[in-house]
Length: 157
Ligand SMILES: [Mg+2]
Image (cartoon, rainbow, N blue to C red):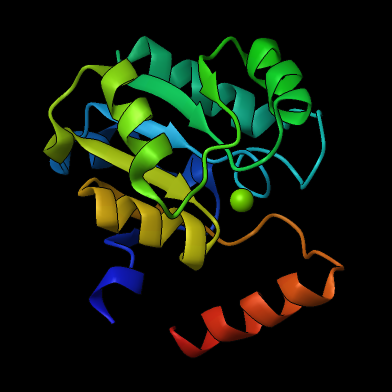
């Protein structure tokens, strides 16, 4: 199904290079947090992710966080890496994505949403009309429902 298919795929966020960004006309990224920038629920920042964020900033790429998680989980992490954020983003509904797009102040075709989940990040980005980049989740979750969703995602590969 077209809406469940990401435009691009990488394993980890730091594989996305400045060259690739230029080739794909991207000026801004909407970033998921859990299992995209760090492990689920973690406040730790991997050196490679920190370096990637610095590279993006140095290249003038605009960044904003959009997470479905709660404010008390997202805020400390967003502050740590110095980014604006939207918590309780309600992906895949367009509400949060539209808010992020407004913050970025870029044309929608020059914005890409990066995340690890098909049914929130990819679907939400595709519905809202931004480009979509799907990553492999950094670690695997333990919850039953999450395992079920990951199984469904595998069928879409
Ligand atoms: Mg995620």
